[in-house]
Image (cartoon, rainbow, N blue to C red):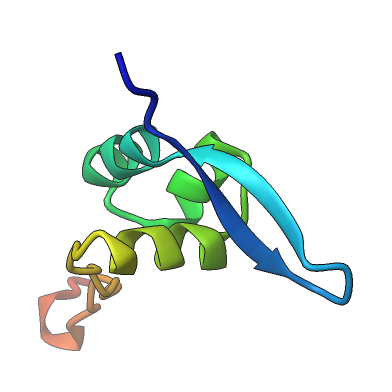
Length: 75
């Protein structure tokens, strides 16, 4: 059985590489729908999560905050 753990180049002067389970990160992104929450659960940066998702062809969701309509307020 093959492992889904892949090395990802993190960057920096040293050229660090760290291993991440891509299938787990993709699953977490589908569950939480945000880069920040996925990165927190996967113990990596949101930039790394974004690189993995783009590499696998997953469309990123943009967050839109709920709007406050002045007309709907009641005094």
